[in-house]
Length: 163
Ligand code: ACO
Image (cartoon, rainbow, N blue to C red; front, side):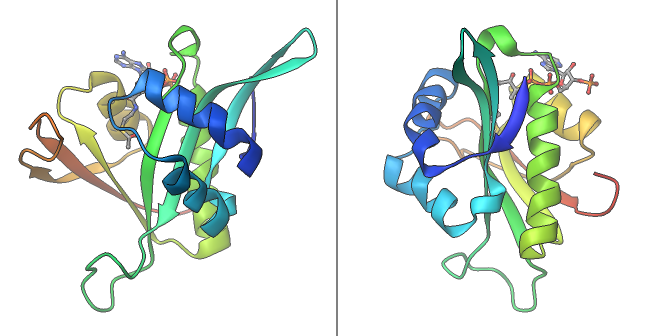
């Protein structure tokens, strides 16, 4: 697989992957808002066969912006909106590679000092990825965060040279 920055042309395929891989889905408008506002934050993993490139995974990352009630003097923070890898391409290191690339880039391009995300407490694969592979810590449990009332772990990581 190879990894490259996502372009606005990729977002229809990213939306399809998001629908297939996760219950948390977004409008094309909201997905494109990532590409337009923080173009260096979103990446796709691709495979090419028969001269045809296909997206097999993506990560969408944003900066926390003014709409969110951040405490005063908060450090600039990135937020991972969504990451997924198509089923047959899992456990090959694709999500880890996408996330590392995106987080390095959020730090270098937008000065992010922290990164946050939410994950379902039942999502073993994602929890392993965030905690063990990438070194995130659980900040708190957000009770009933998801539409079906499942709790979320709210996780954070300080961005440094280790990525
Ligand atoms: N159970 C336990 N550990 C797992 C599993 C699993 N099912 N899948 C992967 N891992 C481990 C890997 O062994 C690896 O560990 P290591 O670094 O110790 O060797 C680590 O997690 C990273 O593995 P990758 O191969 O990089 O992950 P992958 O490309 O398979 O993608 C992902 C992981 C994104 C969670 C994938 O399973 C997926 O798309 N799931 C559905 C969508 C989803 O849940 N996305 C995250 C939602 S949270 C959010 O978006 C903010």
